[in-house]
Length: 584
Image (cartoon, rainbow, N blue to C red):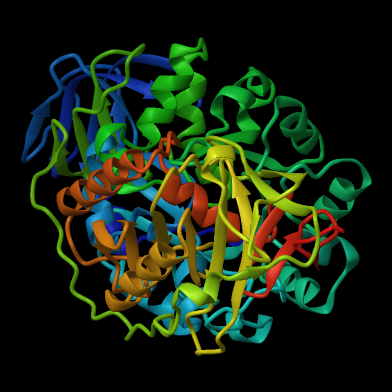
């Protein structure tokens, strides 16, 4: 496996050795803190000498190191900076610099990102943009190369990436491997595309990430045999344990929609914890602002009884070692001086964040906010052709399939219902919580509109629409009125991407996402307030879900069981095939 370490220059190494021996002053000495040692599982008083952005030495005896600058930690704990093992920056709705502003005050100093959201819109140009936009940030942004663009052939995306395409990015210094292999049936069956992408990772001794919801038995054995080394889709402790037994690193996810921590925490003990890491996957700005980031996962787990040291190891050294980041994830000689402090081991609230030995955040605020400096690719939205007639569903049978939303999860159920029919057409039935759902193709003007029914959103009127529709990111819309559905889609299209809530011909709230239809150049506070307005609007329409916009985004993802919708129609994920809306 490729080890991503930043080699020392000889002069830098000699400087560090002199500081480590105590012969010359360090750039910075941290004193008065309680060191969290993730190797030994101990915490103890120590002082830390930092030279050239790296840790030169750690001493349990005070006064050993002298520094050109000294920082007294006042008795607080000093821990390695947190590492998010799997996420999509695009799901924050912000560009990388603004994302760094949002998460670094919460102790996060590195992330392992998969830019497959923007890759499904802009292909290699999207990945290159995210690499450029995240370069030279104090937040270390590592990238896994998106393996599923598109996720399946049952949808229309804005791009298609082959193994040969991905190979052109292997020399990028922050690329760690191949991102989540979402087409797990393709992996298990040995499809040419999936085998080529897996072998691209293996032949370059890089990690290959997984995505295997509800996969077990011989299917899991085959998936792991393909060299898939991680998974963030477990929904039960039993499923997670099966994956650990198969040698798969389990990434325990707690995001805005998929919240698996409660269910998976029982799998973590002194034996299994080293094979577990924390991930957020998809977390929106209002949740980042109100909850935090990986620190939220840690607090929640510790509050439920997990040993704080195990929780901290899962946030640092476990993830670093899994991805071959062998100079990150610990406070020890030679490691990058990426660290954070907190006061209470049972309630870990970050107070300072250091990146390469520089204090970048304190008391929940960046000391110098970062700004985006790279021009994004030009977006393309072609969904404005719809009108109310676009959502007309002729009744071709007396019974129909309905997608059943499961709150706080991205898996769905399926029910067979007798739909409400008027004048020979299926209509929404809010009284029974049966709404229309549509996915409108927006990349190339094909005119595709996939139509279906959904239960569990609770809307009594109006419509919600978004250009965030995983993973091909067409426009998904749900509504109680065909006319309102049309207005919601038209509003999203007019913003060159975004999210909208409408009622009886009036736009109640909207957020523009002109960067790939996924992100904005606005700062966290603006995006937070915009999302809060949208959530207020959804509640006014009768929706009880915490975040229906994230929930509906996953209703278009045809690799998560059970029933989903793309611009080409309903997908039975269990059979990995398109299916008819009507059953008889």
